[in-house]
Amino acid sequence: MIEKRLPPSAFVDGFGRRITYLRVSVTDRCDLRCLYCMNERMTFAPKADVLTFEELDRLCALFVRRGVRKLRLTGGEPLMRRGVLDFVRDLSHHLRSGALEELTLTTNGTRLADCAADLFAAGVRRINVSLDSLDRETFARIARSDRLQQVLEGIAAARAAGLSVKINTVALRRDNAREIPALIRWAHALGMDLTLIETMPLGDMEEDRTDQFVSLAALRRELESFWTLDDLPETSGGPSRYVRVRETGGKLGFITPLSHNFCATCNRVRLTCTGQLFLCLGREDNVDLRAPLRDGHGDDALDRLLDEAMTRKPKAHDFVIEHGRSPALARHMSTTGG
Ligand code: SAM
Ligand code: SF4
Image 1 (tube, protein in one colour):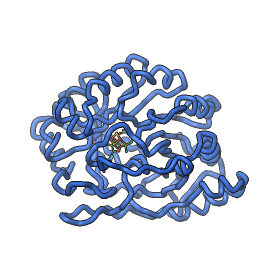
Image 2 (cartoon, rainbow, N blue to C red; image 1 turned 90 degrees about the vertical axis):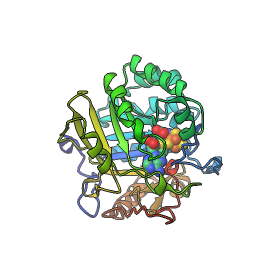
Image 3 (tube, rainbow, N blue to C red; image 1 turned 180 degrees about the horizontal axis):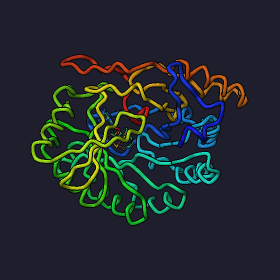
C-alpha cells in the first residue's frame, strides 16, 4: 500500500531496499541517565553544532519529498528540547498533505503530561514510551532518577488525550528480568502493546554490559512456559517481531538485533541532531549534512548527497556482545536515538 504512493525518485539503497522511514534525534540531551544508554556524566554536543528546527525542518521536507512515509522524533529526550511542539506542528503539514503517513515519537514520558494534548492536536496518534520497571526503586536505579510517578502520569495523560501508547522495555538481567511478565500484564491490561529490547553495545559504559545482557530468545522460552505466544505476521521493516499473548490478549514485540538479524528488510535511516545521517544503527559510517546545509547548498545538491548516502547503506550491522570486549560502537544510543 505504501509502495504505490512513493514518488519515482524514492530512495532505494544498493541492496534494493526502499528507505521509507526516517528517525530524527532532535537533541542528544536527556533528563534521565538510563544505565544502558548513558553514563552519569555525559558531554553533549555544543549548541552551535545542533541543527535549528528550521534546518531540521528543511531536511525532513527533503526526505518526505523522496518517499519517506514515516517520521519518528527521538533523542536524547525529544520533549526536553524547547520549541519541539512547534516543530511537531510544523511537520504535521506533511500529514495533512498526505505525503507523510505517520508522525510519531519515542519518549521517556517525563514531560508527557504537559505535552500529550498538543501532540495529539498536531496529528500524532501513536507514541512509544520507554519504561523498564513499575517498581519505584528499580526504576530509579535504572534511570538514575526517581521519576516513575511522573512517567506513569505522562502515560495516563497520553492515553486520555487519545494517543495510542506502546511501551518499550529494555531487558536487563539483574534489574528487571524477573519483573517482565508483570510489566507485560500491566501494559496489556491497559490495552497497550509492549516491546522488549535486547541491550545493544553502543557507547562505553561504567559497567560491563554482558552482565546485564538477556537473550530475548531465552526470555521468550521462559514466557512460553506459562503463556501461549501466537506469532503475528506483521513486521515494521525493522528489528521487531510480534506475537499475541493468548492469555492477556495483548501484543508483545521482541527487538533482537543480536540474537536475530533483521537487516534484509531494513527500511530506515537516522538523522542526528547535529546533522549526521547514519545509514545503520550498528555502524559508525555516516554522512554529514550540516556542513552542506550551512554552506548554503540548494535542494538539488542536497538531493544528490542523499542519493550518494543511500548507496552507502551497508547490507548488515555487525554487533557483537562479548565478555570484556569494548563496545561495538563508541557512540551512545542517545546520539542516534535508537
Ligand atoms: N529518551 C527517549 C526514550 O528513552 O524513549 C528516546 C531515546 S532512547 C535512546 C530510545 C530507545 O533506545 C529507548 O527505548 C531506550 O530504552 C533504548 N536504548 C537506549 N540505549 C540502549 C541500548 N544500549 N540498547 C538497547 N536499547 C537502548
Ligand atoms: Fe534518556 Fe532515553 Fe537514553 Fe534513558 S534511554 S537516558 S531516557 S535517551
